[in-house]
Image (cartoon, rainbow, N blue to C red):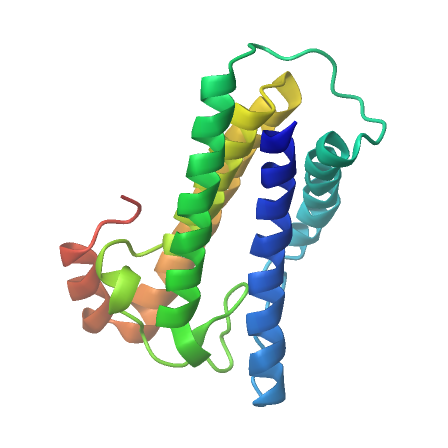
Length: 189
């Protein structure tokens, strides 16, 4: 099905964008991957993320999977999911452009760089998490299974947990500058 292929392409492009930005920054001497530096429990997330990626790719490539029947069958919902994935990719691209050299995966206490408040960050303080959340919903609409629904719920909870941790760091590190920014720009949408 074309929508499954587009769902898989979304995941590949999303990962590609993040890895490309990380590689570019590494060449400039910036270690952007700070995931798990503060909380080692974060390393419990990658196996679940890899399984999620497998489920999405398996649907497109007709690989074996544990996903049974769908919760509902709607071509319109699947295409709405594709549209959401496209919006999420655009949002991620805008976030990576706005972030510039300040992009990090996780909290960088050693070299936090500048506070980014322009571009897409003038609309939402957390465009990357919003993009990831939109992808989760979009992929669920493309492949409406109970397991992807669980991923949507767990993803929202994990994103919110990380956002709260990052906001606490930003408020401590940037002080009034961050608090003024938080007062004028929404956390999510």
